[in-house]
Image 1: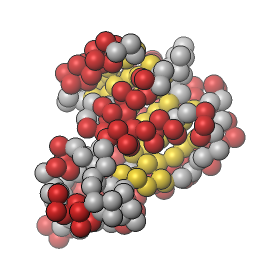
Image 2: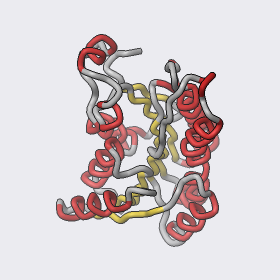
Image 3: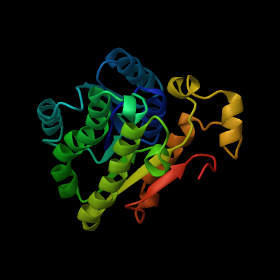
Image 4: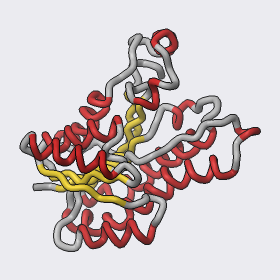
Length: 239
């Protein structure tokens, strides 16, 4: 049984990804930092439905701790599917943005990507099969007012996706990014009402976490062996 790690694996999109990959037959590691109780509940739900799941707790910005936990995890068998989903946003227009708002958003998305991905790479390379899927955002492609920090972070993830894909393509490892638009989560519900969504999205609705998870499921499968280095938008036609 292949193993999959989903960072931020119990949030709105993360939980849908964790459930879908478990249903696909992966043993899933559901990562959380502050919301470990939610991760434990989700793992129990997955096991009750016949899947297999464990939880991991660490701060993705703590490179030493991440390396310690993840290196031990792949001593015997690799994690062959990694979904880098952990991310935060702390919005403000740049003239009024505090330094910590900039640094924290960059730290979680960009440094978190490195801190989680790098310790897993050699075991994945030795197995000669792997899927790295980075959850980006439409903001990393088009930009967004009040999200210079978030757009910068996700734009960096898109660029890192392309570079890493070149490094490992010959080892049977694909690296892609998925860039959601407006997805129905607690976070988006507080930012967009139905009228705004209807005006912004040609499909006249927000996407669902399950629709994002379906795309990630495909990219994690053997059906996607020739897709790598791509930033794939899922946004109802916004761009």
